[in-house]
Image 1: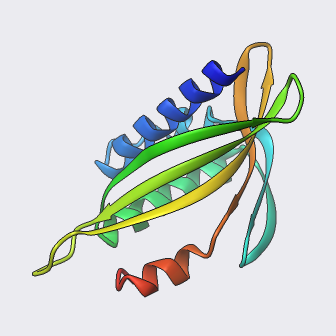
Image 2 (image 1 turned 180 degrees about the vertical axis):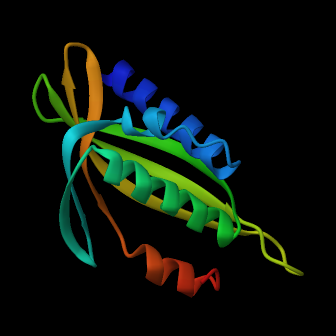
Length: 143
């Protein structure tokens, strides 16, 4: 399971990179997620479905990241915590780089914890827990 989950996040990182470059393939992005998911952050808990609305929200999210100067989103490390033979938590350490006008680029490290289910050899993200992204962006003067 560990190798397939690592490959899932390699695809995730590639999709993110392409989307930041404006080459969005929302079907590819959606293929990373299970049919339903849950997300938790200090802003609350939400649930959703992997449908056209998810693709629309993700496209808007990538547009927002480009608008605030996100230049790169890179995975530093993936640590897997198995739960059982079909589930794990992937602790993903990300580094985001933001272009700033008339200033040096801003680099921010953060972690997201993804819940992954692997059925029939294909892992999918069915949830995640993240920190307060908006507060972090404000702290570094991005937004």
